[in-house]
Length: 380
Image (cartoon, rainbow, N blue to C red; front, side, top):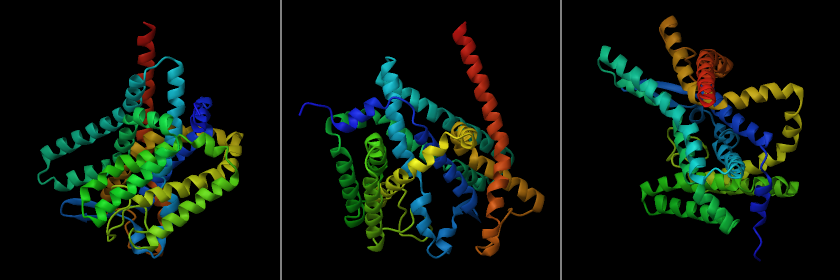
């Protein structure tokens, strides 16, 4: 009775980096980038651009968000990756406080640098052009993906508490968090306390992250357990949507009564369970390919540049739209939803990529120069 819970023991032994986890983290961010490039529909109003997507215009398309809304998976594999990183840091004698600060710095410094750059651009152009409400709205839209960085930072800041809970209560913690997420939604929808929903920013994303602590045990479980997770999550999510209490889409859609993501609702709990099951089912096939020569180089590039790409992809998209507007005097690739719009989706991905690559190159050079300067300072 005095022994350590099995999930904690499994985690303690897993001090090495897991290439599959690294791949999933990077691929999750790339999926979000492609989604934003391919499926963003901009509507220009007096206060600037407003983003929409084709889900509200295409019957049944909301179902693909059950697979392509991958932010829950990022928090899940992030839980395992953070736990592995902590075990390595602890072995080196790093304190928990230093570990958390270092993780937050690596995430927030680039985010705040991006905010500073765009805020400077906003101030500079606003000093020349009057009536800059549209420009302010544009900058807000460009920086909107940073919600993820700050949400993830919030979970990292809570990492010491989540780790203590896991070590003390093990399997009970995800159950408690899922129950609390349900109670928050009941308070939000049945008792009309809307602002309590933001508690789920910690509860639901914390649950996804907490489930990541069990990745080692889940990975080694029988395939039937993975199938049970996938089916259980699918039935739970389908029940919530079929009850009409929750929208079917796992991304925000204009016209829905609320978004399942802002703040995350109980539907995201079902989604992460479904996706964990699917992820574990495909893991053997993907993992076998990660060690092949054909996959190694692309996967390494994906891992190295996924976070810079995530941070910069809307900036690259903005540059592409500005260039397209000045060349054609209208927004490029603009069309109503139909066969032509769908046919242009490959260009909607490749053209913003071309305007984002120079940004990635510049950031890469700055990072290498900063790293060289830090190494030189350390030598002296």
